[in-house]
Length: 282
Length: 241
Image 1 (spheres, each protein chain N blue to C red):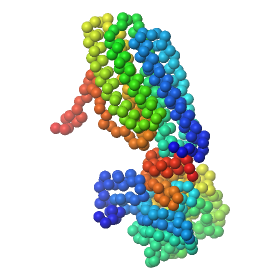
Image 2 (cartoon, each protein chain N blue to C red):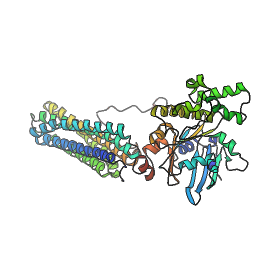
Image 3 (cartoon, chains in turn blue, orange):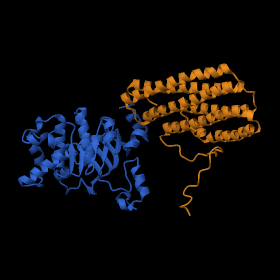
Image 4 (cartoon, each protein chain N blue to C red):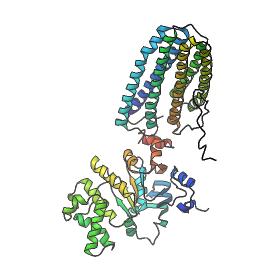
């Protein structure tokens, strides 16, 4: 077979599926991945930030990217929805496919891409508008809902999915920036959900939050993974262990090891992973 | 291995390893002394073993306290996690070995009242094998050599076979001379204790293998048939027809 990756789940034997689930490299043979990247190299001007990263990310699960600062995990995350396009000196090489479609295809509008590949950042960044408008903005500009009732329904559904509805339903027309940090982060997640994404990228979504707000986001991530492909960059090993099913470890611009989270945290194969997760360098 | 960025973490793990080595040393000494006490009818030595068990129990509690602290404060991962969980299990096995050695020492005191019998020597030989296995597994723990764990794991059969032949021998003696029933029964328990110590060594071998490699040692271990146990019916003897 030319390309083992194009096998669908039904083609793979149970043994192949098991071995795929236990795979400790980034590539998952025998399973159709939601995000498929091959040989990604990224340069910021003359400086190379990523080296030959090939990684598959399965759907309906949470994949955590861990690694020391500057290891390239955020750069890699930003390749998936072409956020790196916004940096002039940044050059991305290699193949990135979402559902089998090349995201760097000229025919793909990055704005449309970013609706289906939503992103949540470290610092909550609600628009300086009302809570309602924060969520309604996306569906309106993408033409997902045009009439008032449709829009209200989407806002309510998105806020409910983000676990925020009960806390804000009586003050939908107050500014989103007036919410607490944890509420703002859930508002931003509701905003991402409102445009029917398939993938949600989260870049250290809890690093500015207290433990209770963090627990609420993690609970939310766990619920959302039923329906979305979620990738989370985190500096907290404990958080990666708590929320993810697969973990990928990056170091100095390379993907060192990827595998089932339990394996990575109990029996990592690579000594660099071992050193990092046990706090021996970083 | 390189050190943790937080040096206190490395020190705490090392302290845990040192405690286990110390506990292993005590258990080995207790077992070896209990067997000598039985073979030489040395009541003083037997009492030393019996009193010394407290020290082993205390050390186990101390190790458990340290492990709780480590889990709560350091959240060990990877090899550190395997090491911490392994320490908990190893301390449990060593504590049991200490108890069994103490029990052997108690029986050594009882057997004193009877005339010496040749069979004590067979039990002594079996005891020496158990001491060797325990020593080997403790060395494996200290040296991180996985091969030692595999070797102990495979050897358990030897101790089981020894126990089985002792069991038959002791039964024969007891049937021939009813006065032998008392000391024979005690020796039988001593042999059973030694056989259990072998099982604990096997457990420890499995734990150390997992600690060092992250893998399970496997399931295909040679096993001797225990004559005191009724044979199990074959699985699915009816449905397999």
